[in-house]
Image (cartoon, rainbow, N blue to C red):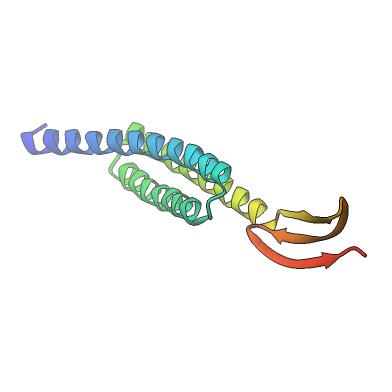
Amino acid sequence: MNTITKRSSRIAAGLAALMTVATLAVSAAPASASGLSAALGMDNKGRQGDKNNMRNLGVGLGAAAAYSALKGKGTQALVLGAGAVYAGKKYEDARKAQSQENNREYRRYRYSNGKRVGYYKYRGDKQVGYYRLR
């Protein structure tokens, strides 16, 4: 192998390792961030950003895996492909969790003199109506 081929192999291996580490780091961050935002009652903008990052990371890793496979780098392609699959799964999990959170319904009751007089109905974070019970 000449010097240029060795150098490009090292660069490609370094990039594959960096992408794998980035996949693991980014995939751990949305789980903790989405749990924290749900606990604090924050809106879905952070979750949406994390979800989009997972999708984009999966596409990028998949493209890198295909390129590596075409170049004959089997181990590197497998590692990148596994990262792409993992990012895709995290994206799907985040998408389903966001959908379930947006469809959640609950009621907050109003009382007068110790009796229920009505309730506010919420879907997701939005109030959809007030219903009187009398």
